[in-house]
Image (cartoon, rainbow, N blue to C red; front, side):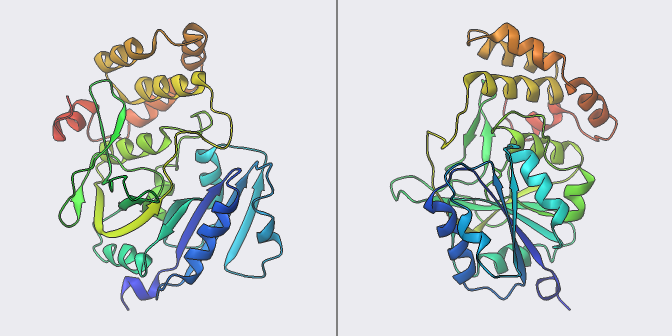
Length: 294
């Protein structure tokens, strides 16, 4: 029996104050054509707008609702995986609309046993916004969307959490997303780099396209200190000294930089770095050279 026919996909949706977007996303998943058996796990991560209340009265044994006090996307996704039954995990934001047979196309890619993780092309609710095909790091080590189309299944440096599709066994082997990142941001970049450093390849499948609501303002507070903390955590955990210094230089003028730096240094980041180094077959020099990002 083919992988597509035998695999149950676990579609994991993290939501916080998403308003009508969450229902729109769930409705589209359920009405979009597919031959793949799937389950949906929704984590309502501390919403105050009652946007997930409709799920409490929705009798559907394929939908599981988990409510938290606000763990953040990384920890919320990890929590959902603890309940996931699927061999393939599909992570979606609560503001996405898939094309028909999107799930079939994603799952069929995994008929290649060497393929571990991939992302679809990401379109936008706004037709003037270009489609994106993964991410790359710029000279300031900030992630930027790749807007140049790719042809066929293509290795890319980084993929976002919205649409990230991965074998459950690999996700668990890597111990999931790093929940040490604050609120939101860079946990997907961290996972992408760790996959490459551990010897896995990260792919983009342009034959699958999912619409995403790009927005500059989150429906919950995100402080500048949280963003700086995440950049420093990523650098201290995964980069060499030169890239650490470059990251520090890029954020040293931000508010409460000293306090944030002290908080990162006193965190578990060094234990994380050591544990990762003991499992990697590549280092960050190899990664940046492989994709010509320096």
